[in-house]
Image 1 (tube, rainbow, N blue to C red):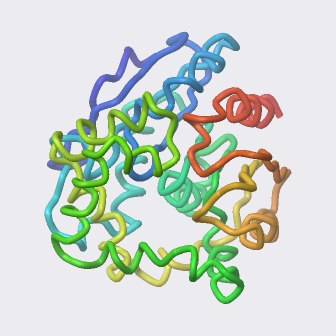
Image 2 (image 1 turned 180 degrees about the horizontal axis):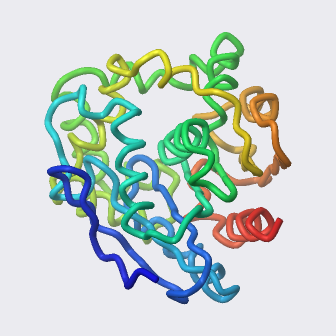
Length: 278
């Protein structure tokens, strides 16, 4: 049995991890999105711990201070998947339950598609399966994803987001609960994580064909979507089940925005627990 993991290595990169809950409990790995950190799961994990589960939430590539490559090509999906597999290897306990939100969901879909033997169950929040995401593009998703084109620009997004995250009034419009919105500047800008975080978007042109077209998901899966999500459409969320050949549930959290782990942690925990218990 592995001891507590506060950091792990993948090649030259070292990733920080929040490892909590019963150390002998079944492990649940939690992958954060943009512009979040591992601490974005802090309101979800206590419920999981109460039910006997161990949680491991890494600061992902671009966010962990010792894992911030500068090149866009170093954020291709295959490399990001390798970071998650390195955490699984460090844990050394066999298959894990995998949960992702936002970019963490896109990464979780890739891990589950390529390495189903490493996954016991999958729970994804907000971002649908990549095939469903592509199918949704001509049905309104393209307009919702306008910011992804802006983020391809050099330097400008860093300057704009620095101003947004510094201003209390602008931060409030992001939609995160105040205690999380107020941390954005320190967590993302002052910490030096902003360029690495944006490189998840800037790395998209370097994704391989297999990155863009992952196969069917063959592990038990729950996809959670919120009807107030500004970034993801209902069409993509509803279509995701077509890409899962295993027990599947589509769950809608009503009246919620995009930031589910921070704003609706109990419902997120319920979805995860219902899935991991089978």
